[in-house]
Length: 232
Length: 268
Image (cartoon, rainbow over all chains, first blue to last red; front, top):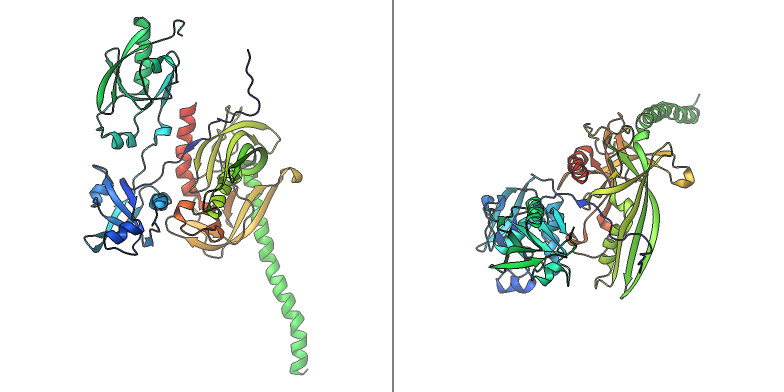
């Protein structure tokens, strides 16, 4: 049976996004309810919930609990959860390396924090990828936000499994999207380029079965993945 | 001769004095502009875009294919082009307007580029792709899928030019197919100069989005784009006060162009 797809290919690459300036910190909107609860009725802004370790935000003196109410004197018009992107969008308008002044509420007082805006790290969608056709899954490099979310240090190596085909060989072996693959056939995986090289090496020297070591929800798991008999 | 007669006599004299005094200046400006146009027009190209647009209204989705043209400027001999993202993919631009007037999010629009060609002034067509986009600055970088046979004429981004408020700037573009894609030019004035969060020269009027803008001394000032605040940064609905025709300075274009060239290198 031949399946024809009619019309243009809808999944064409739409290009990368330009690297932008950012504040290396996790934020949450100071909602009207929260402002009331904190005794800051009528105030608007973004509350710092995490300051990324070693970042320019930390060096500038930004702290968890700070409420950013203005950027270079421009008020942060955020009062609802949907306004989460207000501050990041305002920051994105600046050139990387620009010096800005944050107006911050801390301990019922107002302070000014000067900082230089660094370049935002590459998002997950722009990390290098490799499709492992023999096992029906893809991997990508670890993104900065993966490290934040999973609590991984800078030294953590490996690749992240994604697009694990339902009913495919990797899926049957127990691999899930989001698993961190840190070793294959006993070889340590550093990144996507290393994964591709080691997979080819392991497949050349072993039978259909390979042993993959993954981290899933902070637990280490060994998986046995089998490839198709007529593998490439 | 009475004072009254002198006054009557002086009116046409003054009128013609002013007229003839003004004409040479305008003529000089036009001559300077023509010089700039002749020097740079081969680097101003037409981009032909095919896009699939999706409009979702109150739960019903409609899909259509559109073909449009926009101007762009070549900034590297390899054929790297910069243009206005809003001109290349208007659906992305309109999606922000739709979402800002539709508070409940019941009207959505999106566009995906499925075909792109560079139409050179000589009539040559080169298939191309988008390599880098900047929604905040309304920029898109496009490069040929195959390296051109010979280096293409390009605009040097290492120029410094700073107009003052109310100075004139020359904008270049290309007419559509109805005008045989002929080079076209407009003279505008700098209506405002925004300094924060970065420098933008606001124009009193503009037509040639995606094309280059020059100061009257013939130096490249930047690219004509649309400055709009993303919906995330606008607390009130409506876009009327949040859209401006601007020139993004050449230094800013050059900065992003470095990233675009690196992306091209990686893709090859």
